[in-house]
Amino acid sequence: MLEVNLWGKSFKNPVIAASGTFGFGREYDEFYDVSILGGIATKGLTLNKREGNMGVRCFETSFGMLNSVGLQNPGIDYFIENELPFMKKLNTVILANLGGGSIEEYVSGAKKLDNCDVDIIELNISCPNVKEGGMNFGIKSKVAKEVVKSVREVTNKPLVVKLSPNAEDIVEMAMECVDAGADGLSLVNTFKGMAVDIKKRKPVFNNIFAGLSGPCIKPIALRMVYEVSRAVNVPIIGLGGITNYKDAIEFIMAGASLVQVGTANFINPLACKEIIVGMEEFLREQKIDSINDIIGII
Image 1 (cartoon, helix red, strand yellow):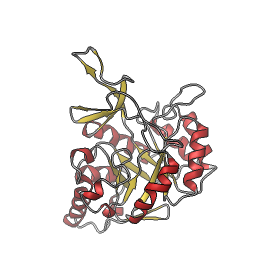
Image 2: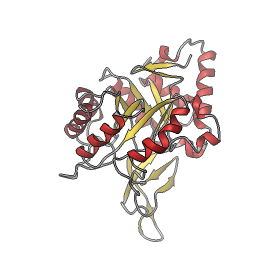
Image 3: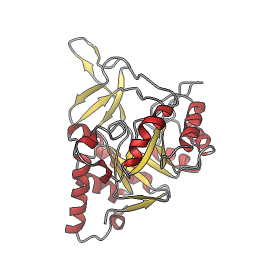
């Protein structure tokens, strides 16, 4: 009923734990059997280990949160040697989220992931900067196309590109990434935001700006999924403020074939499990045989 088959992979259901909110699954596996998930997107991985940003990293806002973690991660080699064996035992689809600070770093990281046993590479072009000019990969379509094309040339694994909602034109960005070889798109990542400590009279974050996620971004993310799904012919993974099964069904009906759940995991560690159960009950109540029957139905 909930099974989705894409890129030669079988997802038990459309629910994927989003990158940066689920680690490598170890901690959540203590709450419930995470092998029930359709997939897990790893914590953002870079070629080398990163310590992340200094100062405040997470800040709660009305109906959402800001984060400025800075891609803290153990590096791809450590992941392959120490985390991937555990994840493989979970018997769920593994999306390796790949970040980088330059095209060369992306390419080197993709080569390593191509030679290991992850199922899909999720290329995160939302965070880093181009070293030559400091232009964000996720903002300018032509720059995004360049990095996607470069990574495409070094991997045969399914390549899903995670888009930034801060793109100058999200539809144009999506089309350029597909033209460069993306097999699918994840959208959207966090929105650029900020918070102020009024007693200290200065920004909360050392970097001033941070990424906004949670329920407050859902209507905008949903609109972007709807728009992009009508402009490209590759599967879309929808995310942005999904906290319950109704949110997930909305994204599916708007055009997403799969969904990712992020911030909700911090509010309720059982969120993904409850969403899967809720989606299944909804289909039964509505007498819908397969989730595939309502993808992009509106």
